[in-house]
Structures are given as C-alpha cells and as structure tokens.
Length: 142
Image (cartoon, rainbow, N blue to C red; front, side, top):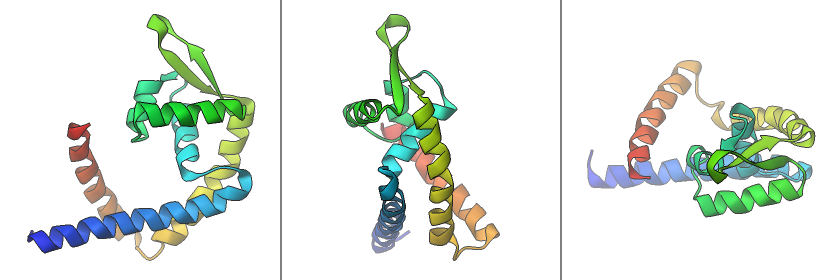
C-alpha cells in the first residue's frame, strides 16, 4: 500500500472511532456513563475478579488510566475492588453496576447499529475480520 493510502486509512480509522465514541458518549451521558466506563463494566462482567493489569490490557488503557477509572466506578458503587492472591486487586460488579450495564448495553448497541448501519452484514463481517487482523498485530506492541 502506498504511503499516502496508509495515512488516509489510518486517519479514517481514527475518524470512525471518534465519531462512534462521541455518539455513544452522548447517548450514555444522561445515565452518567461513557463508552470507556461501559467497556470496563462489560469486561468485568465477562471476567469476574479480573486483575487491574488484565483489565487494562483488554480495555486498551494504561494501568494508571484504568486505576483512575476503576476508582471512580468504585466511588459510584458500580464495582468492588477486592484483594486476591499475591496482593492482586480483583474487580467485580455490584448490583448497581449490573443494573447500569444492563441499561446501557442496548443503548450502545443501538448507537453502534446506527453508526455502522451503512454496512451490509457481509461488509460488517469483512470489516470485523480486517479489524481483528489489524488489532491482533497491535497487541505485539503493548
């Protein structure tokens, strides 16, 4: 791929992400939440007692950024931070966190359906495979 093409694709990826993130953030704002918070809640629900390090990795955040976000979520009563073996801090959703996640997930789905609705199911599947390929390569750099 020619260098200008790579730059164009990279900028389009960023623009698509920013557009979707802004739309989800706006839709979740009345619930006092954001896409970043929803992703963390969703990952904790999928991985009860997940460590901060693992949670940072799967949410593509630094451990410091994740720590600040987790503290805010804990202060709001959405997650519990609990000590595990070898002083590893684990994370669990509280009932309030589960409620917010259940309320926010259809909102996120609806927004992303609108954002990506211009793609047919075949195109969406192809885009997913391409992005998984690119995202998988990026994991080697963390």
